[in-house]
Image (cartoon, rainbow, N blue to C red; front, side, top):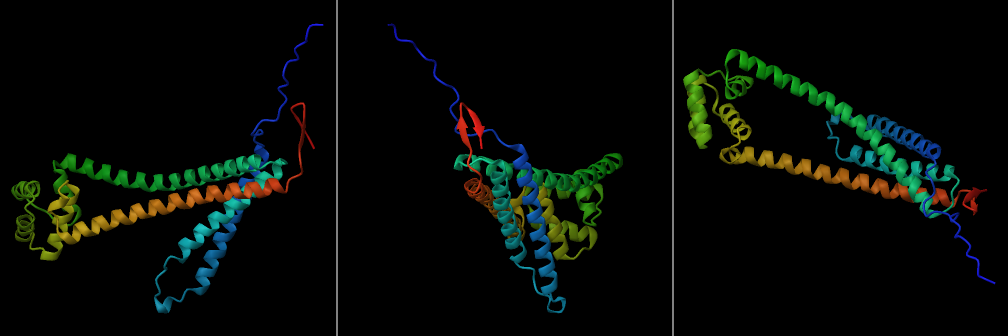
Length: 261
């Protein structure tokens, strides 16, 4: 009797089940609500403990509390998403925790981009208005930059100042501004340093100005690294919450590829 081949069943349970978007939405809503609640708690506590008479600095406490609130919200959101999905395996908990974290992060990124975009658009509108005014009056960008700092120079002085800036001759540029406007040496030096930095010659600026610029760049870089670490840690904690949520879910058995409680 010839052997009869039986086709392999394709009803085997996949490694990752389909995402339960209703559960993910619930996790996102609960996570955002928890973060909002903790943020309000931090604001209320901070305002209650602040003594204006002592003139104390804000410090890093609010930043630490904001980071802690984000981590707690990520854990709660992942836990709720995995628990409400009804799936039991760790892989499903990790998946729902990660998706809940991703949706929440995208929402906050869109909000931050919207707020930042409004501020940036205002800055660019001011810059475009300044450029348009300069173009209509025939002013050069250097003249507009000097005028923004309260310095008005005639055409000959502007040409000479431009030559000094291009050659990196800071002392001569400072003396020219002082002679032409009667400005205090400190203010004239600060104006020339800013012009050197903005015109692409930061090496000729004073050591104090270069140090201030480099310090600002280092602080911005450090802040970016902190945000990156916090967001990555929130992902890990959200996945951990998903694992715990899946561990507490009702067990789902599979028969012929279909889930059955």
